[in-house]
Length: 120
Image (tube, rainbow, N blue to C red; front, side, top):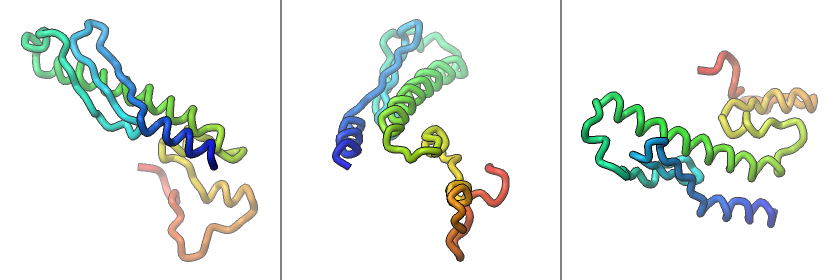
């Protein structure tokens, strides 16, 4: 538990920053993937079409989130029980009823199974 706490504390203060290839815009996200800073490093954005600017901003934010997701996944992977895919847990696609089935345990009665059908 101490190692888990250290990993969590380390991530709590982590920031991932991505700057666009043309150095026009940069984005910082925290460990929860929340945008904490968006910064324009040049004036190039003033001449860009709205769709082009939106795309540039979205790209740096998504890249920063992807990098942070990888850091969080790596930090917590060591704490996952054998047979559990950390990527599924982190992306929200993990099916706990499958794990219980693998252990030959029934899903708790009265509890809604999280994945009775196709995922949205």
